[in-house]
Image (cartoon, rainbow, N blue to C red):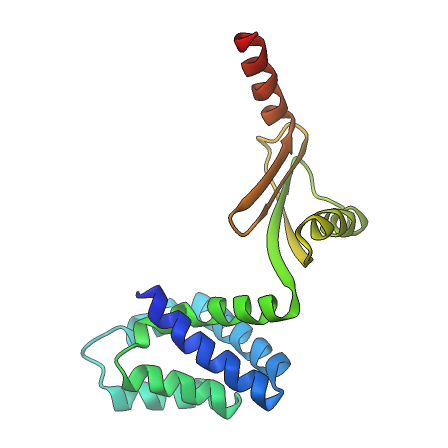
Length: 177
């Protein structure tokens, strides 16, 4: 897979959706596309199989996703036509990233020792969202290795306020004192 190629197709799809005022619909459709591709690895196997002709792939995509908006279906068809079917897998992620950036939204993960309540999760989203200047959509992941505290990862930035990290810092300070 070539990420830069997938990003180009995602950018083209995003630009068209923005121009046509269909960002919400395209976002929902690429989420569905992502779910289908994850749930049926056989589909990706077909898309990347050189023995399957472009016309067969195009028909498969029309049959599978023909009820989606024309710009989504046409993007998929152009990708197949240009021998970029392998990049279809990454398309939903990059489209969602572009839409989220456009809307000032960032997705991330908050890791904790136990499941956070909806209220606690919202509080974490608000606090870290203010730090980043974005609206956060965090997914809570429970890690039994975390003794206490939280680790928040948004993009390439990690805020680690776990007890383990605090103890490690304290140990370093004591050793360097």
